[in-house]
Figure: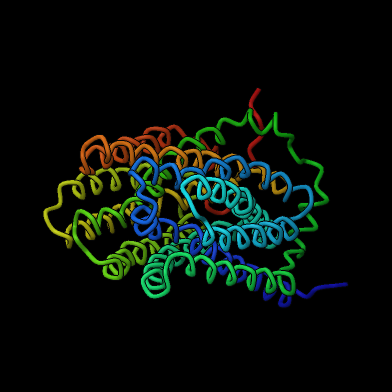
Length: 413
């Protein structure tokens, strides 16, 4: 069947819209636990360290599935992997609402991570299947911006649902919403345009051992690790910090959390435009400058005397790190062979999810050891932000031309 350019253009934006919706609901289910741990810890009598272990148990399995899911999407196509992922994570979101103890939460959240772990890298494959190379940074930035929308809505929705119906019912509602998304995907998600045909017929798919020889991937993994230490650390503990230290109620906390996320949303979109139009071959500067903004903002946040300044500095940190993370996640789509995008993206996401394993538990342990003070926990995040700055300055892409897209990176031997 021949597809006209206009029809193909409409189809790729339908795919992108559905993927964005998936990322938003993905964040609903992922972030809800950060709000729910406040009543959960009271109900089950959990310490900060135990809360950190619950949050980290998800990221352990989530990290393991990143490269596996990407490789499966490269082999079988993104649609099948995405569908299975959405169904699995929705079922385990519902089961989270049935948890009855600390141990049951650990097990359910671990299984939840397995279900959800394939979605990020599979969605990157769907972008590569649907968009030509010179449009992928903007497409990926739109996907990344959807995560900020998810973060905004998730905190607000989770706080409201938990307060009105209880945390158990909240997870059931969110899980059912995910199953509805799976029905939409089954009917409408078909990322099989001309880019997909080109990618799947390509003979330049790199095996994992050759991907691991590409120094850029290791650097991007380290960069994403540092950024994710901050993102997951803040996402996991800022709700508790604002309620316990700054004495806000849960709904007010959720409303204020939306301000940094909204600014991050616009930053991510602007960064995607710059990456396609102005910064080809110069991506390292966006990563390093964004990291410096993050370091300064996090330090000022840790010393802020008022809630207003806390939110202000958190917003500046979101702007800097939003630019850095968008750049990091789009680089595989521009510099790696289309037939290996899933595996390459999965390796980079692996670095971020390792940070997700470490950050919540490490911060919880520090908060407990310092008798409820968050100072040491914030210093952990400041130190982590230095990683993308240092490593980012060593990136080499081999192209400074705006007119022609750079060639795919090949393994160094």
